[in-house]
Length: 287
Ligand code: Q0Z
Image (cartoon, rainbow, N blue to C red; front, side):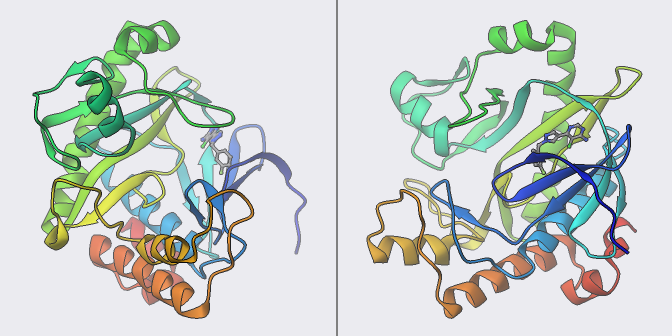
């Protein structure tokens, strides 16, 4: 049977629909982006891997903070969620110096107002994880902001709460990932408020699209690290000499298959659950 749902939002690789006044349906497609461009070729099951990982972590972190997850559908790529009033900041935690954190450090010696030791190299582990909020850009890139700017947006007590919760979540998940040979370099979390103004974790959490996962056995500080999931795609695009403006190139079968295998490997390594078991019954990640 088909149900006509109201489409309420599009991300680069996900879609959001209204189920009713209180519930949303979040659908993860198999689309992949690299260098900020969505490619014309899909990676089969990528959306299921991300949905399964996110649900796995929602189930295991509910003791730290409630989350929006209500149900994972049988298709493995759609989740029913509580509709929240989302906070207008991205909540990023960084345990390692990479991406925009590394860029800001090179320019200023600081990241979001956190004064860091001098002489750090790219991808180096930080003395301790830092909370580095960013604005939500509608188009273009999120912009890192200092505490004072984020406090103007959400208030001081809410800021202190999301910072503490985000750091606790990062500590819990990064410890577990490290035990499975994966470094969680950084992660982006999105929080909202429920009808009682209580803080709730929303969106996706601890997926390769919202986090940097690095294979620990290949970790070499002093430069950019290979990505657990997208490295074949990046290497292929670099070798082509594509100028990284749309449209992106189509991917050959071996790059698609290698990348799918990396996503499935990430799922199985992190969760300890066989991906086939997830396909047979997506609720296995909630146990
Ligand atoms: C998430 C996004 C996507 C486009 C809004 N539980 C929630 N309550 C209210 N709003 C959201 C959520 Cl998750 C919400 N986004 C991000 C996701 C497509 C935009 F799949 N926007």
